[in-house]
Image 1 (cartoon, rainbow, N blue to C red):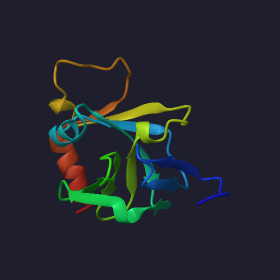
Image 2 (image 1 turned 30 degrees about the vertical axis):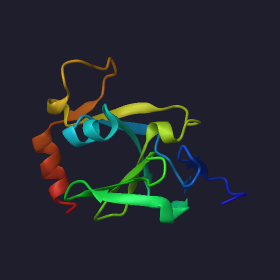
Image 3 (image 1 turned 135 degrees about the horizontal axis):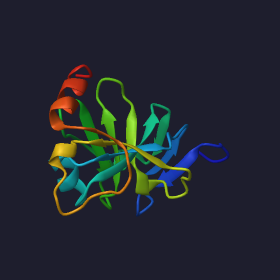
Length: 141
């Protein structure tokens, strides 16, 4: 993993290191019940495609959280590492996992109809409801 120009990240304890070929600066926010249960709030995620390598992959625990996606986390410290689309193998990673990112733009809010009324964002972005998401991801199952 040393010496490449790829974006690097690691879990809190350093057991899992990640190297990503390309990170899309247009991030998404998911308000679904699963994301909010998983992280205590909405999930801010960047699309990383399939050019993702892990060092310490034996420490990664996975959970199939929906028909279309699997979540991964460090089995030692619990750091949320990704959700991966099952059909395409494309990774989405928590924005906070890669702190040196710049020029970020919120491009989409998923499950906007599940967003609780105790928070809101001032950003203007596209939004998709639960029904719209289910139709969209049905093609990826």
